[in-house]
Image 1: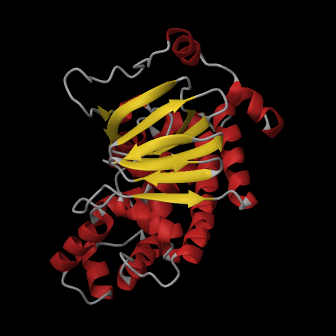
Image 2 (image 1 turned 90 degrees about the vertical axis):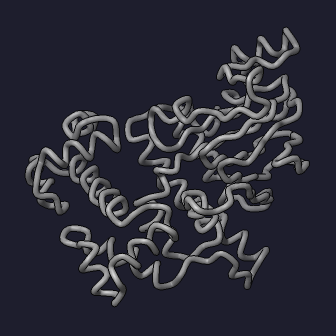
Length: 323
């Protein structure tokens, strides 16, 4: 499939759509317990087996009952229109509109028909760690800060952004290419999509900055951005103590501050960075596992194995064999 056949792929009836069209009823394909709970939570396990970004088409010819989830969801109206309710607020989503929902919002969607193609882009909170914190967050962009809020623990998770990108061909092109990449199931799919998403976040921020220029609400502390950058540069031999000394903070205070601002502790951030570099080395070099262990700042290969498998659900060798 390529861009020329994307329409054909999206407008083709899925098995669920065929049933819903015939039976004129909603198929609860995730088996959510609506009989037990009025607003059930969609389990992460249903979507993120391949990686931290999941893309699919909303099933047509039915409504979608109220539900919630603990991941960020981006809905893109590829064709037609639909009516959504976010925390009971009615949203009319038109062609080339995007709605970005924080985790824990309550969402439901009215009936969508033949020409209404709604694309769901689901993003696991693990994505908002190394790849985002050490990249797009350094730009202080509005969209990146919205995403950062999604991984903070002590904050309200009930917000959304509604964005009209109908006149922004750059963003529309990124979205189309992201869908083609995802649906093709090629090798390194998640890596390519990660980079598409990073560019997407910058472009969305440009749109938002035009809309709310000068609004500095909920911006990340400048000093915290410098700390993130410092970890990025010194991940091989950094410690919480050396980081605190470099920025003249009390170590316990700094540990608490990082957790509050970023939703992850210092050691979680450090491991995220090291393991991200390890994946790159496994893909692009023939270094031994022991050499990679020491290169990224670990002293024990068995500990590296343990941390890698815990985060990526496969061993370093299993990951390397897929390259």
